[in-house]
Image (cartoon, rainbow, N blue to C red; front, side):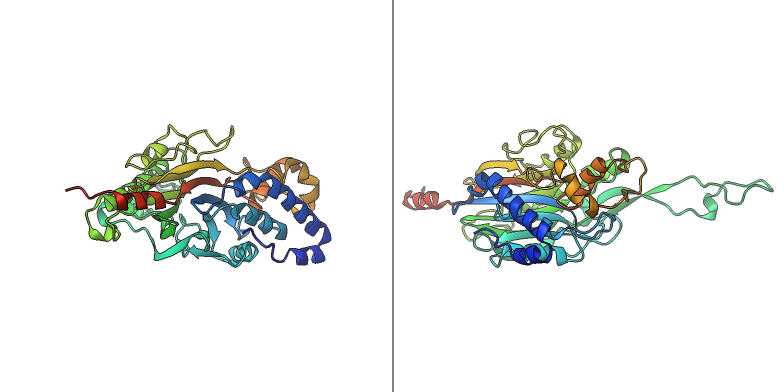
Length: 393
């Protein structure tokens, strides 16, 4: 079933131009997404990850999402069975609006916000169709044990002892050289692990928003270490002989990681870290296979699955600007945009209406495109065949 467009008639009544535009754009989206939506079937799982930028706080000053935008987001999400969302903010009203549009067969599970500057006040969430996916009653945030903590560099607070000796009459506020100390810590944003099942396929799904920091030096190394510690954590857990990691048939738990890994490129150390401990990125979405020129590699899906029946059938990335907030739509939305770019950095500030529109629309839809894979979930033939196979002596 697709979404029921709850409240769209009210939007048309309260703002006729926006309501008509929304209905017209939804018709175009439905046509564009028809092949993707047709992939949904009883014997596969359509799994996606989407970092929906700053959903939905307006803390950067670009304005809240327009009422019509929630319908566009829901139209894309409804093409899937289970979607991991990143950058969901403390105020859940935006997510609740999205869920009302999706319809009563949809539900979600969300984390609390991660405190501290690295956490950025964000939540992570899984949105899923309850007619296709069920929650196995296990959920939690990943906490690293003492021996696996992430080593980072933290700026030390300057003390009087650090200050250089001053000659009489020197300026009292002499600059003190910055000093750093090594600290061990958890993830900047706690990864979120939830156990699900779809069809015959049982799995634990972990969504992440890995620390970004900078593109070089100690902060880049922190990003790489977060990815490495995460996959190492699940490798050790899956390879454990503990009976707690096996189901009644003796099968080991399957792990899928997805989200915003802030991977730089397929050859970069960030990707090498993701693949270092037996996690594989499905070939259908690996590297440049689903990305256009200029699209980043931040978002990834990786699997470490022991079930030999596991099979990825297909995968791809959604072009979310094919039918909405197009380049030629600037005149429609210009009055709804900020008059000037609220960007704090002068270097990154948009200087033309066209550049500002290209930035502003990322706070309507996102600056990340949804990434997805289709997984086979019907193992009935294998199960029945195994029942007919005589046991080995």
